[in-house]
Figure 1 (cartoon, one colour):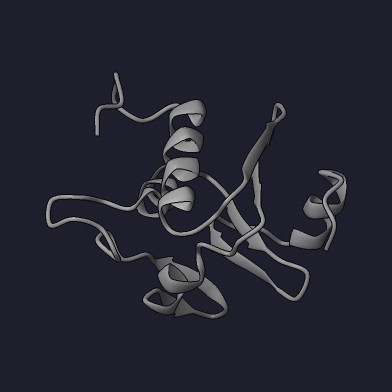
Figure 2 (figure 1 turned 45 degrees about the horizontal axis):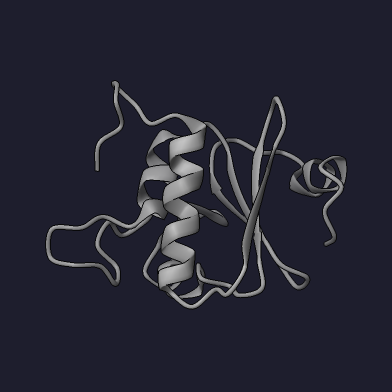
Length: 117
């Protein structure tokens, strides 16, 4: 993967996440961005397999496997998002998972973004 700089831009991470989600079974992946967050939503939970291989400490994901389900020389985009994001959340109608950063009230963030919980 080429970032064009020291770290990937938000747009680059979103593009890679959308591509991986579609490769893993999502039919539809949409994204919205504002000044604070980039939000991806899909008809399919493509993170489920990745999260099964994560390291979780005190309810927070602290390690995401780099190579879950990709080619020998590949890296999943969730690994990059985890490495380069200050804060990272995943949520569905049934759960909220803090994937990265210090997030005291994830539900308040989700509500502020106008997303269903």
